[in-house]
Length: 250
Image (cartoon, rainbow, N blue to C red; front, side):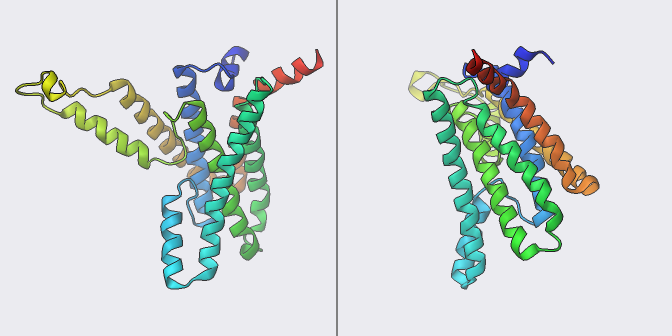
């Protein structure tokens, strides 16, 4: 694969095509990590809606241990998003080629760590399951914040609620029957944004494909299934990091 093509995934100069390629790749990784994480700890970690709802339910029921676990997951996602923003702004201030690659390098490291600690889950579930949930929430928050910032909030990859909602809105426009007076006084004819619809559909399919791959991989390979995900992330991020290392030596 050409070096310039790989560099384009996370280089500072962005384009819609580059954002879409990166978004699809990260949606695949998020789907795979989410599915694998569920099989490992029995909980999805890519979205906060369920975690916040569970937090409220357990608080009402007085389940303090569950409340602490839910709050820890929420804070992990929140702090990881903040970390991503800090890394990107730090890299931008220093004019680094790898300002967008650094969060992915960190995500790859944490996913590798998830794979390594997985062997301890069965024998030390009380300790390692809550830590693993927080780790995965941390990873998801990191990735979601990075792609949100890099695409100016046009692309998100770790949850599909917004994707499905936006797809439904565009489909409603697509199938709307424009009849009667559709002049300026009525806001004009209703038209679907087909480019946006293709973008959203491709992200949804990438997340689904990643989830299927992650579930099958985890079923047959166990925690070793995280290794391909780590390789994908390192491939996306490596070239700009090397560019900065070479620039430091000059």
